[in-house]
Structure formats: C-alpha cells, structure tokens
Length: 226
Image (cartoon, rainbow, N blue to C red; front, side):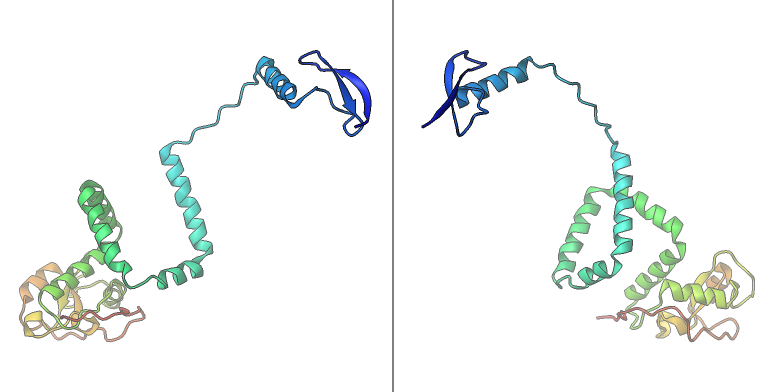
C-alpha cells in the first residue's frame, strides 16, 4: 500500500502514516477518532435549549376541536361515505360502548343532556312524544322536529282551539292514541296547556284542519311497532 506522509494523532499523539487513498486522515485509528470526538463533546460548553411552551389541556382540546371541524368541513363527502360503509354489526358495539360510558359518567351525561335540552327544546318535546307513542304501541310514529316546527309556524304559534299566541305550545293529537290515532303530521296540532288538558282523550274542542304537507324531510325509516 503506498504511503504519502507521516502525521501525529491529535488524541494519542502517536505517529502514523497516511495512505494516498485517504490523505485527509487526521487520527491514527477509528478508536482515537471516536474517543477524541466524545472528549470534545464533554468539554464543550452546553448551549441552553429554549424551553418549549406547554399547552394546557383545555387549550389543546379546543385546538383539536377546531382542527377536527375544519377537516370534516372540507371532507364531508369522504366522511359520509365512510360512515355509510360501516358494517351492520357496528351499531350493537356502538350501543354497548355508549351504555358503558353513560354508566361511568352520570354527571357528565346529566350536564350534556341539560345543555342539549336548553339548545333544542323542540327536539326534546318530539322525542318525548315519540317515546310515549312507542309505549302505547302506536303503529305510525314518524313526526320529526322539523315537521313540528313547521306545524307551529303554520298556526302562527297560536293554539289551534282558543287562538291564543303562546311562547311554548304543547302537541295535541286530533285522534287520541286510545282511539287508534297515530303520531304523524296529519294528526298533530299545536295547543296551549289548558286546552290540551281540557280535551284529554276526547273529541276536538273545535273543528281544526291539521297540516297535511310540509317541506321538512320525513324520517328515513318509519318506526313501527313490533
């Protein structure tokens, strides 16, 4: 092997010959190279690293909600297709998971339900009436919150029997459940609390014409008793 020059190793201070293949060699061996590098790293003054700004849990959750909302807003079609491709066995697993969460977090569930009821009181009314219809084994119960809102708007938010304008109206069924009535659009009229209590399960107090058609979409699946 041809040798080009003789050098002194800066770590062990020993003499060594440099080959023509690697004339830029500084250390006599790889051991001296790594040992010298480690020594310089230990003796060199450490630069202070800038402290990272820690983000609070509330701030990170709010940031995550914003990012998620932006993502779903820009990928609506993909998200809807992914949900549509969900296998039929998933609803059972989802229901069990939700039930476990409800049992473990009763206080959070109570706060969430109270907030939802304050934001959407009309949905709570429709859901309660649908549950009552299901308990009474009513065959057809397809009234939606959007349809109930249109029914109230069609009657100008007034009672269908006494004509008084009320801030909150109750849902009265023209044909009661006990007489074979259904929980659907053409069997529901808005009524004040006193008129609804006076009518009960009897005939209507005055002749009324329920709303037969709305612009609101109907339920995708009509609930029917088993």
